[in-house]
Amino acid sequence: MVPVLLSLLLAVGPAVTQDTQNRPYSLTYHSNGVSKPKEGFPSFQATGYLNDQAFFHYDSETEKAEPLGPWKQVEGMEDWEELSKFQKARGDFFLKNLKDIMGYYKDTGNHTMQEKYGCKLQNNNYCGAFWTVAYDGRDYIKFDTEIPAWIPLQPEALKTKVKWETEGSVQRAKASLEEECTGKLQKYLQFSRPFLDRQDPPSVSITSHVNPGNIRTLKCVADNFYPKPISMYWTQADSVVETESWGEGPLSENGTYQSWVVVKILSLDRGPYSCHVQHSSLAQPLTVTWNESQ
Image (tube, rainbow, N blue to C red; front, side, top):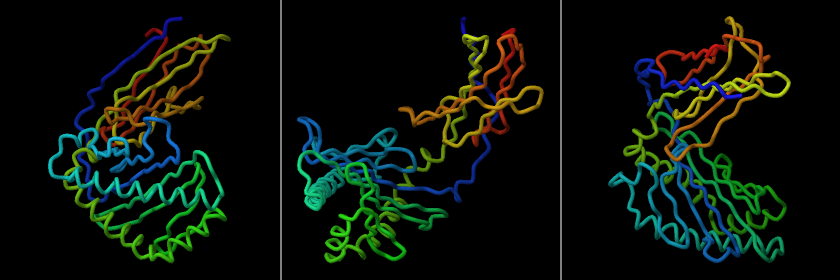
């Protein structure tokens, strides 16, 4: 049972020019701390993301914030030495907070804290922010910019709320999210729009495999596209065919995505069946057809 492979790098004309002014953009920092890391494993790590693209990584072993992907070639966007110093100081404070939280739980041994901090812009204006902290994988506390206040998500987090708010963190946190974060994002976008606004069209392939029970599996795969949103479905004789399953892969090392959609038919069914793909990079929807003779 050799699969039939139709691999098409399809030329469908130039992608439609996209108006990116209304597109939302986000700056997000994911941080992770470990109270008792294994030897050679950093106690603190942080990764910065512009939309879904990681642009720098820091860890407490190297004590260096280093650009990632295409940002390695960008000059002037960030002073990486200063960012390294900032992340080191932040890591020290982060681990101190982890130790405090362990004390509230009366925990010993190895425990973790995760943080997600960031802001969003649309039309170059602030349109939202987030700051959440998790302890051992469970949501622990978050910041609400509207109130503004720290919102405990576990009973023990009330002690953290009282401590942080007594220290005057509420206005600092609000300003950090609504002013400093958005200012950073606006600056970064001056250097990063070509990476974030790019339109990479998908390549599409279909595989056919006959399973036990005389059932044929048809799988349509879209590869190497960006941005992530995509629509895929099967038809036969202009009627939509019910999908057996679908899936999508994470962002790959080359900064693109993969998605697939599967249908199952009788092995004697010769088709034809068509896979339809819609993506913002395509001037028109893309259709690839399978029939048994292929």
